[in-house]
Amino acid sequence: MVQKAAKIVPVPTLHFSEGALAGRVVRLDRDEATIGRRKDNDYVIPDPRVSRIHARLTKEKGSVVVTDMSSAAGTRVNGEETGGPTVLHHGDKVSFGPVTATFEDPAAHDADDPTVVFDVPKIEIGPKLSPRQQQVLELMAEGMTNNTIGEELGVTERTVKAYAQELYDKLGVRNRAGAVAEAHKLGLL
Image (cartoon, helix red, strand yellow):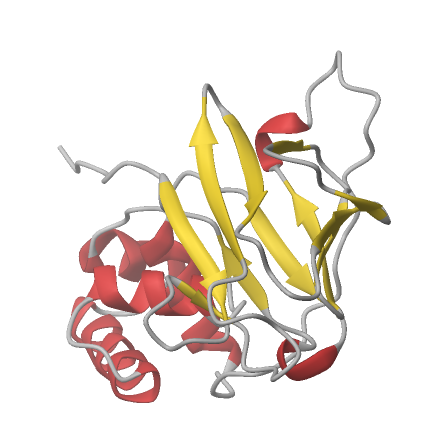
């Protein structure tokens, strides 16, 4: 019997469309984090107009809350200055000074939620994968074993291992968990 690993659960994200992070997607996978230009922040925005520690992002009861940390340029949600901790909703535009991102929460998309989930075009910022490497990566993300991937694609397990090693090399990782995590960071999945 083939056992599958648990699927990777989507997490809330910030999609940057301008500035130093244009085209980047930041996964908000921490329960509490800081965002700003200083390198020891959990999420770094390399823009001199962003404060060193600009804001704090926390997860509370299934929601993401942004709190400005007395930044010079302020933190805004949908153009409104935050006067304290502010709960983010799917589709909100969050500005850290002059740098704006769109907040997306995959959990917000259900039948009772009128919010529309929109597709963000994938911008290639990572390595270029062949179509077969992409297939292997996607099946790895679903938790399939090399043997199962081989059966699915009609190739041998040894061939799958070769594709996996090529993926590890291109992504700069050592194993399949690292490959899946790095691929999510780069927007390849």
